[in-house]
Image (cartoon, rainbow, N blue to C red; front, side):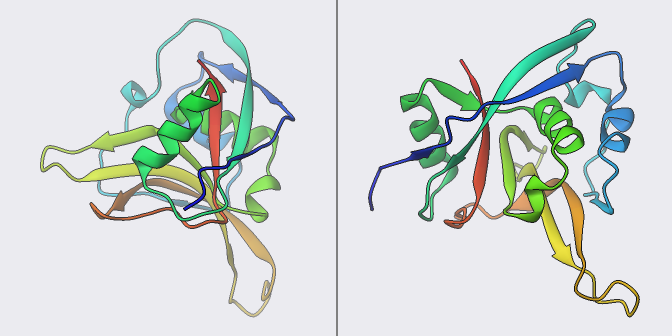
Length: 164
């Protein structure tokens, strides 16, 4: 396949507030649904720093089906690395409508459980099928979704990245 990347030059500035707990960072996103996994979540999943850190994030669109390794290789070639959990949560809180356009994956949030299963977090949307909200898209934080070993990301996905 073609290794060409579509680089979104527009930076998305966010402030990561490290004084917030993991659950407070999630709550700031005001998601319609947080799809929790069976992974026990705690504050250790967020890099612990002091205060607030301003960072610029980028959305990278590969436009082809790719494995995690292919995505990381492509990000490296652009001088970028996968965004971490705290970046994903800050992005979702500041730019709530972006995930209605396409899934936004933070490969830097990957976690491997004691059985060797890999999990990753991402932002996405889904159609509400209840009578009152039919057809109205809802925002979802997929928190540590389990991946199959051979799973690939579809061409419409965007990958949240940060400068190295």
